[in-house]
Amino acid sequence: MKLSTRARYGMRAMLDLAVNWEGGLVLLKDVAERQGISKRYLEHMMTLLRNKGLVVAERGARGGYRLARKPEEIGLDEIFEALEGEIAPVECVRDASICERAGDCTVRDLWGDMTRAMRSVLEGETLADLRRSFERKMK
Image (cartoon, rainbow, N blue to C red; front, side, top):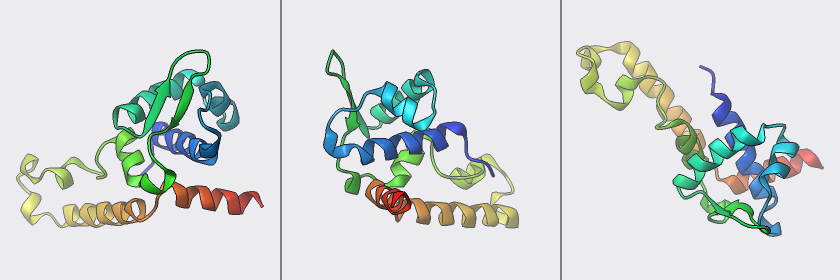
């Protein structure tokens, strides 16, 4: 299973905002430059993140983006779901009613196990945890 570019880039953009948390508003062009992401693509991701209440945008000459909450209060699962939707590799894990075989499907059980494992990793980490990992790597 491959994660989309939106998930990969969006997580990097959120990490960038967390690293620059104390500095206040961050210009999108600066995030785009630091992360090697197209500003236009980044704008699309920021809209998704803003709609889920994870970032705040302020317009004007001194405008920019900032996290809506402290990095410790933002779970990686929230970011992932804002960008990708509900965590599940296949639709039948989310909604058993779409498949007549769901109740007897051993393979669906496997997909459910994968979903729980992914959710466990993402729910167990915050943006602050990711920032600490980043800072350790930069030493």
